[in-house]
Image (cartoon, helix red, strand yellow):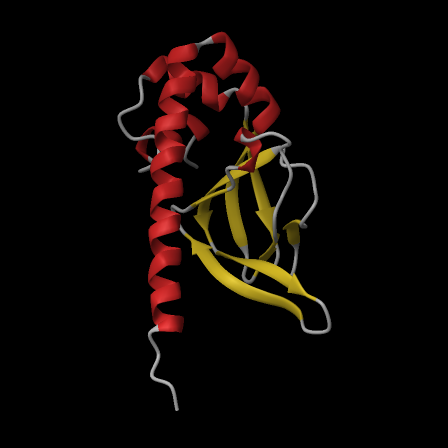
Length: 154
């Protein structure tokens, strides 16, 4: 079995991060497992964890009254889930559900925020990575919106 450290050192999100910072991150990490249909969190929940998906698939959903949940994104192997732990008031903005057996590494956002406050180099390294992740997600959203609004009118 691969250790948390060896997995995180090789993960694309943390690749190239200083080993001493990886060790600090690992101190906030644990392995988790979700069965199909399990919810990791719901909109409005406190955002105190984020995840590195080792294998499986997660669906991100928004709730629409009288229509239920609508999947707007799916995540899988090597994806990173959750950046609300970084932004006050640290609340979830959507639901997240496993659509198949999913194994992940969960990182305690409270633990990591404290470590980032104590070690500003770690905080800077994490913020740079999450800003890039956020940019990638916004670009994907832009493409989705172009698809929706560029469709021919019938």
